[in-house]
Structures are given as structure tokens and as C-alpha cells.
Length: 159
Image 1 (cartoon, helix red, strand yellow):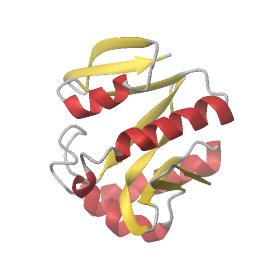
Image 2 (tube, rainbow, N blue to C red):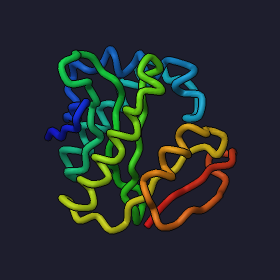
Image 3 (cartoon, helix red, strand yellow):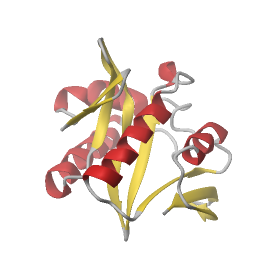
Image 4 (cartoon, rainbow, N blue to C red):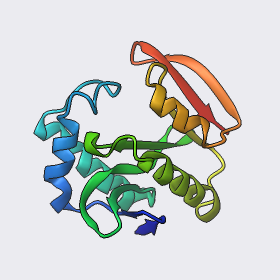
């Protein structure tokens, strides 16, 4: 599966993404709000689960690449989350502050709402992750809920 924006290609993950995917998950700054760094084995398991969920459900967490520039920027996509479909994203540190997360999240949100007819989408982040919360606010969810998630304040957005 593949989507695109003006600057990005969003495509299904492949096993050759393992190295850069694991590198991103071992960066303490990238993982600061996501429970801490993962070992290579843990990151490989996450990648396997992403590919398995796509095969089983059709919900895709897309690998993000810049158009015309090889290399993994991050990922953005959809996954089952109880009665909701969760929109999530992660961007590698060298690609921060370039608008890639918002651009990818808007494209994935539109894909989920329009192409997959999802009516129960949600997204969330650590309350102190100001950049991520700013992105989520721009996605125009109807509702906002403050809660504790994994022992820390978080904000959940949903329709």
C-alpha cells in the first residue's frame, strides 16, 4: 500500500527497513515520550507486529520517506485500539521540525476517514510533548480528554 503528499511517500514497511527502524527506536530523544528506548530485538518485534497488523486487518502504519530522497523519515499510520482505530506517528530526530509529522498525519487521517470510512479514530500523546500535542490539535478531532496513560499525564483526541 502506498500514499503520497507533496513531499512524502508513505508506504508499507518491508524487512529491509529493520536497521533504520531499530535505530529510531534506540534514540533516547525520539523515545522520550514513548516509554524509553527499545532493544534491537524489541524494535524488530514492533516492526513485525506492524507488518502483521497490516496483513490481518488492512490497517497500515506507513513508512515515511521524502520524495526523491531514500531513507526512513519515520512512520505514521493506523492500528486497532479497542473500540477505536488509533492514528500514531514517530519521526526520526534528524527530521524533526520540518512539518513531516503533520503532513503525514493529515494524509493518513484523510485516508482513514475517506477511503476506509473509519468513524472511530483517536490519537493521543504525552501532555508535556508540546510539539506532538500541537500536531494533534491541528487534526481537527471533535473531542479532547485529559487522562493518565502509562503513569503520566496524556491527552487523547477522538471523534
